[in-house]
Image (cartoon, rainbow, N blue to C red; front, side, top):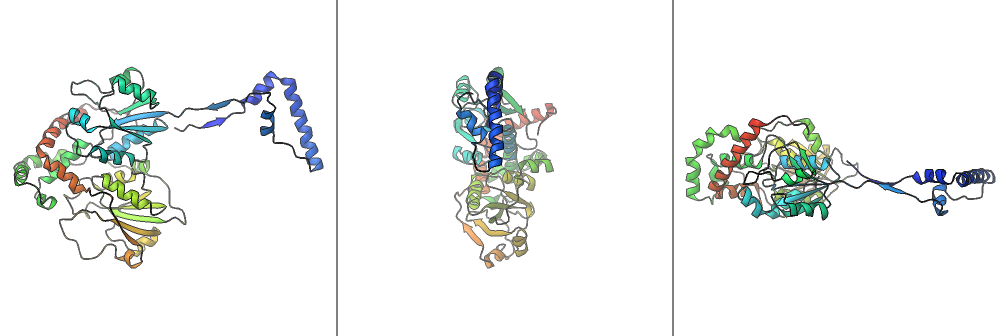
Length: 428
């Protein structure tokens, strides 16, 4: 939905209606002057649109449309493509999207401890291509005071939320007030993923035999905990498998749909980009600043042998990267080795890699994947702005294994109820 301010020619018709004789005289004079100018070829006549208002006879009216400002909030913990798609849909309902990021304290009180800090969650939200403004430390519930602030200070027209229920600890609707005043709009929830689901995947994966390669600082009692519940994990494994059904339409919705210009400086960076986090956003921002077009290669699930083989599968990871405002295009299933042929095909000017990367448990062949760009003098090692990695995020969950296990047990029940009761909701 776009809104533009424009100037209308309605003032001309006002003149015709209110001053018919005078307006007719002006038109006749203009016509005569126009003919004489073309005949004598030397007399300039002021352009009519500029000249007529200067007569001061008519009032020139200005028409315009106020941009629609919409608000959507969330915890945005373990940011995923479902969050991104929700914000994409919200932006489509207005012109300016303002996003509220719920504070750590509010999340703890209503859902349990967040995995990511407020600072990390802000980086992720601000890095999304559909977000225009961000409100930090927003409340979990839309209270009357906060709603007044949204309407009066932030000039919000509508409050947006998904079709899944958002309940407070006492069972009441967190968006009841917005619905009551008629300023609430609903979007369709993105199926197949949630933060609860991702935490479940991590807990399930970390209980496998390769736990020791993930974190050599894990405490013995934590490892025992995981081994004891390994059977339990395998029994519930089906609930931790991704239920996302990728479609070409979704990829198109997330894509920019633009190719680099003929003289564009194309920068290439590759990786797993698993469990998309603030470190990914910052390195992509740094890479984008080195050129005109950022091409991101996303490795296949089979290529990634790090912890604990990707948590998110290829299509999920691709959507998360595509949603980032610094990314122009992605290669879904990029090769491990950056070859000269690939560099020529995509007209790559620079290949970059961050200094912070995952430590793979299994050693790869000795072939340097960046040998070609290095030999061509177009490879650069970028200082990673943040030390965070997929492994370090997973460690936080493992370190608080019992807390997240209990939190997930409660959330999983509500997820099951949602899917059991759900009905088709139109939208995209």
